Structure formats: C-alpha cells, structure tokens
Image 1 (cartoon, rainbow, N blue to C red):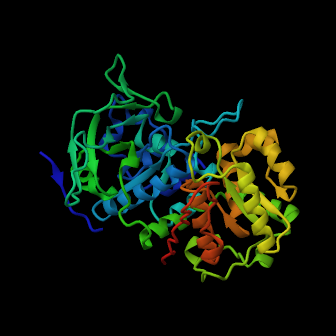
Image 2: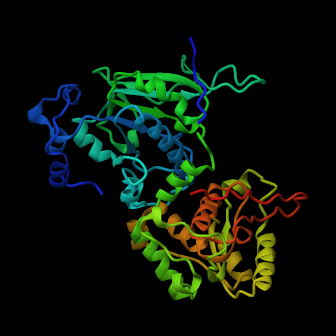
Image 3: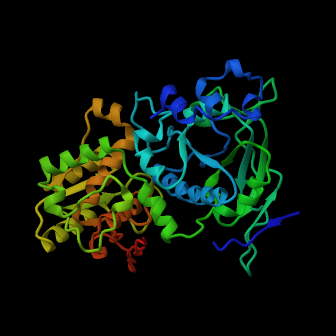
Length: 435
C-alpha cells in the first residue's frame, strides 16, 4: 500500500571527540554486528544517542549536481530534526566521471578538502564519514533504501507526493557476501557493509521520506540514488541558507585570491567583494560588488559537444562573443574555466591572447585534486566584472549562486553563450537570494 503525504513545505581527533562527548553513553545499537564495548574506539563509547542519515548519488553524476543534492538532503534533515536527533553523514568524494587526472588518488576524500565543515554545521548537524565509523561502532549501515522512479511513470493530472516499497526496477549495485552482509561501492571504503537493502519508489520532495525514516527502528539509514528527491522549497530562504553555508575551504579560496591579485589585478577591497568567514553575516545588497577588471568565462566542452547540443557554441563562436564583451565592458583580460581538450585549448590561446587560466602544477593537482581545481576556477569566475557561462551547466549555475551571495548585479551574472545557429537564446533565470 502506498504511503502518501502532502508536505508544503577534518577528521576529528579522538581526544577532541572525547572531550565534547565525554558525558554521553553509547546506545545498545552501537554494539551490534559483533562489536563489544572493549572493541570500540573511545569516540564511539562517548557518542551521544542520535540517528545517522547517509546518502549517495548515481555514479555518473558530477561534482556540482552532487552539491545540489546536498541541499535537498539538508532540507530533509531539518524536517527530521523537528522530531528527534539526527546527524547527516557527509558522503566522501571520489571516482567522479569528470575527475580524470591520472596517477592521483581521488577516493575517500573528506568534505573538509573542498568545503568548510564548520560553516556547514552552522546550518545543520553534519559529520565526516570517518567520524561516523568511530561513533557508530563499526563499518555497518543498518538499512539502505535504493530510490527509484515508479515503473508506471508519472500519470498526468494532480501532482501527488508518494513513496512505496517496490521491487527493484533495475539491478541495484549491492551484493551479499558469505556472511549475508551487503557489499557495495560505499565511497571506496571496502570494509563497509549494509545489513538490509530495500528499493523505494519515490515521487516528491526530499521530506516525503521523513515519516518512513522516523518510523524505522534503524539507527543508521542510507538513501542511495538520492538525486530522485526534489527540493522542498527551491530558491526559498531555507534553500539559500543551506547554499550559503556551503563555504569553500579556506585554503582553496586563498589560492584563488592570490591568483586574482597576481594575474588579474583583483582584490576584495578594489572589487567591493568583501567576505565574512561566517556566512550568516553575509547579507549584501545586489549591485554592491563591482568585480575585478576581467571577464569571467565558463566554456563547457567534452560531453556537451559530444551530445551535439545546439546551444553550445563552437570555439570560434565563443571567441567572437568574448571579444564583443571585452570591448563592451572595456576589459583587457578574460579568465577562462574550461574542460576543453588540449587541441581546443591551444586554439583558444591562438585566437584569444587576452586569455588567462589557472593551470596547476602536478603537485598542486595532487594536493587540491580535480574537485579543488574546479572550486578555484569557480571562485575566480565568481569575482569577475562580468560572467558568461554555458547553457544548463551546473558548473555555471554554482558560479551564479556565488556571485549572488557576493552581491553582484544580476545583469553581470546570469548570462550564457548561444549556439552558433541557435535562433532563440534564452538566458538563465535569476533566482534571487533570500535571507
């Protein structure tokens, strides 16, 4: 029977964890799956009773779509917290399609490598995966829900939010071992096991699954394929609070700021892009920021042109547009973030001598990873006098949001390239920030 609701709506040291949580007692559930009190780390024995929400996303999905899914899951957590104590376990980064730099270890990457976890915790309760392992008593996830659509699809008519436990439409990615535990990818942690796997058809916003989770007796619950959940309130105050809390790690912002100063004559003082380390204090009137004396460009290539997208320009078409913008805004430099192949990059250099790019050394790539380099590119684009991106690219969308937070005039932010033969070139929608 269907369940239906209408909802309107880094790594911590063991010493630190023990000091913070010393007064608490470990619950009985922490000792399941063969663990005893003597076998647990001190952090697990000291952990307070709270339930753990984990999630993962379809493997082919990229870095910036995953950031959007985090916002949806954060909204779900806020709903759960109205009833009982939950904490969101941040899924480690790794093995993404666009992260193709060879000979670099890019699995089991904690969120602190890319984002400021303290800032995230000013919005919702989050912990890194390895803290979950320490607190929960071992590498076990009690229950895994694999989210999927309805086999019969969506029927036209009144929109209805619903969830049902259903047979799996596709073969899920988990298999049982000799001990009847479920094994899977689990972000590269081979020792992690699931105790139960159930497929769940879902249609609706993230909080539609809250009653199911609250009625479950499992202490740790994972939602796999979480991209199937929609936003509770896209573009509203709750959305923007979570998005604003996703502050880039300071070491990446510093690298971007140093590059701006050295190569683009750009600084927060001159560009009127003052930044507060506490995102809750960032409430800037749109139009306040002027940006550095350069044009910011995100030019998506590879899979976008392989799919023959009619709204992605040729290299020559992009260069023509860039030259027009440089002339219009009286700028002499353009910063380009692109995934173009080497042959296209060389073509850009030849046609666009004004181009500046962040080209990391191998040591920098190994240190910051592909995800960190992407963030540095986004940070630099976010501070440009004028920005133009690529149609329907989540990389460009995230830059729009950063510039909205910094206080840029929307006319300098929500712009995209047009395809060479595109007749109707609709520009991105302005989603105004709400405080």
